[in-house]
Length: 578
Image (cartoon, rainbow, N blue to C red; front, side):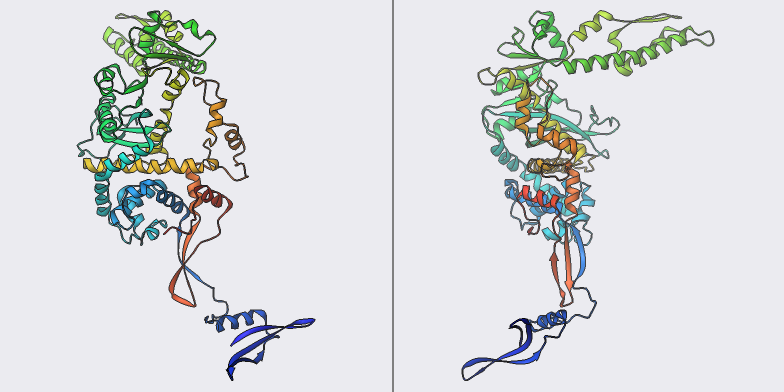
């Protein structure tokens, strides 16, 4: 039986319930019922029954949602990860340890947390996102995550070598910098007291060095004990570049606290590597006092190349940034005035009539505390006696220091024919890419700290996992830049910059995007985190229908314009994640 609409000249069509049959080898049909007067909804209901459907009680919902998972952010991060060569390096998708590592990378980007919390988030019964059902991990125990970390650490040399092969080559720039993070507990053999960049001097810490390509793409990371000096981490990176990555010659870019004269003589030159770094303030002062650098060079320009017998075979590119000079002068004056207020208060205590401050030792102790608070001892002359305290600024020394405000000097043995002065300065300033990576690792996105692991291999694996998450984020930001506050037209911004010494400029497109918080196509501009949160509102819904109550269907809502734009930029379909 079937329902057929039969045209009826100038009248509405006749709706007939018909039956087809065979007679004498021919197919015939007959009308069983005229449904023309039936309500359209009732006709459609009967049509559905004839097609094999089930009758639903009036008022019953067409389907029932069993569970709804935040899904869009998972689809974006996991989907992009699966398009990267990194996914192949993590093994087959159906291998559980590799799947767990993928899950931890994605989880580190969308909801960074301790491994115990991550295990709960990846278990199907306690999951907070669609990551668990999409990967089909079932129930996840924290010990499985530890086993996956151990497996990942074994593969670190292979993964880093593959990333280096893709992003580094002979003759290219390699960026290197060092940071640190604190650990909870006191049982990790890597954890030591040392200089804390996080103002956590009471906590044990680890130190890690990050290698990046010239564009800031993270390639390799290594963890050291928390009390190691920054320059002492350099030898391991040189060995990695030369032996594991098989690079015969690169230009290592590092700050002046890492690439020191001692490291150049003992490690870089013997290894046949070039470098780009900067001079410390006393060395710049030595250039001025020795006559190698004339400050009048900067009357009409902000960059000058000089030579010095103290640096044979090297080029020195000295730069002066007026904005930086003004800021340093302002800061110095603020510190001087604040220190003077403290010293005046000590003077008042010495000269008061009631219970005055007496004794050279007592007065000197308080003066030393006031000077050390802002590191201003070098700028004051002091006269301390049993009942007297007098101080004055060292005007000539302050003026000599102020003359060098805004000056910095880049040193490199790379010939100008290979890398001119402007490109050399720009290369040194590209260390800001590594600083961005550290901000992402430590505070903004990935929360590498604090570290709760006790075993040294687990600490190393945790840091490496965070680096891989940063690698994925770096790729995501590059694709999604038109929707973020990031400058997505850096080539134009670079062309507008008159000199690498001048303050960096954002492109007109980025300034316009920042001014009205809308993209070129009228959508709201996001930060990386707020865009992930917006994508998370695209849900994966497990539903059942009265017609098939024992069968679960997956339904997705309609994408918003922002979500559609994001997935278009990523080249992904959020409904195809398995």
